[in-house]
Length: 140
Image (tube, rainbow, N blue to C red; front, side, top):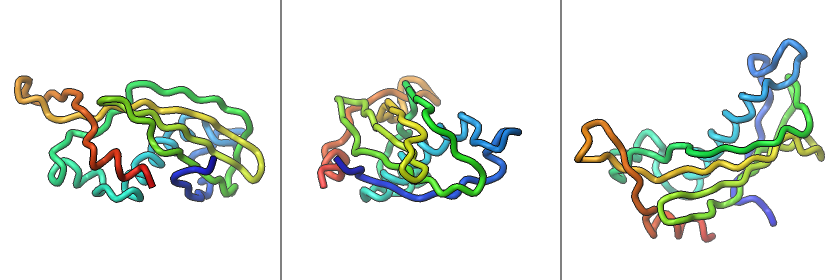
């Protein structure tokens, strides 16, 4: 099965540890950013505009799992692949892969929750069902 969204990213020096390989938390940042860019690719507004245009607070991360299988180093061009979200009622799970050539560097999943601002709790947020029009964007 092919990924719904993928992009190539050059590994930057600042993402590497003293051994010259990517520091594991930077891989997590890459997965998270791929989710944001995938939602834009699917046709949703930029994340900064979603609050105003869609009346949502966002889609915070509630669970994360990752396996680090092969290193990537400064200057490598990696491909980050993300599958279409697997939607629940108000949550969704995205499977990601980061590849360095033919080597699988990272496999991971993120679970996120679609949220709106909670009128009963100033400054708070609450889960709400993922809108049908959003779900349809990922059925391409």
